[in-house]
Image (tube, rainbow, N blue to C red; front, side, top):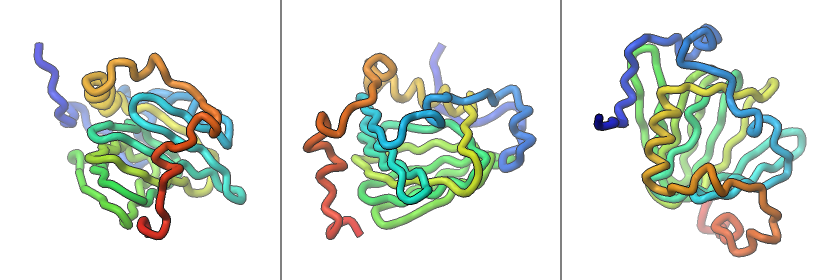
Amino acid sequence: MAVTLDPAIVDPVDAGSPNILESPHVSEGPGRIANAPVPSVFADDRGEIHRLRVGHKRINLLYSKPNVMRSGYLHPNKTHDFVISGKVEVWLLTTACTEKKVYRKGESFTVEPYVPHILHFLEDTILCEWWGEGEFRCWYYHPYRRIIDINNSKLAPSVGQFQRLVSTHDLMGSPIDAIDLEDSW
């Protein structure tokens, strides 16, 4: 049986509303995201996630390799993203379909609360993300998670086996350390 990465949904869901949490396609997300130490760095075959705190805000800097997909989640907060370098295709679930839009270096986007989303990195990309007010929570949206898992397993079979928190000392020379801020803004 061939597996397609078609984001079509058979059962309608109430994207953009807390009612989506009642969908059989949604379940409690990974606690490791909400409970990850800050600051910390998570690295695997897909790239790196640098978790930071600036003032009272949690901010993530993500480095993702080409063709990697991330997320497949929904949150009760707005998610704000800024593309520092590279290109990302953002998939947003609406009540009618999956909308896709490409964002490039210097562009930003917002994912509204309770909207399942995918970040599909089209080239080496560095992205900054932060969340609106309220407690940070995360739920899986299983149709999108399945697409992400299938896609990423084709790119890096070790994803999920070598995920680790690493010290910043171990990341000297990483793509995020090499950001040229003059060129990026």
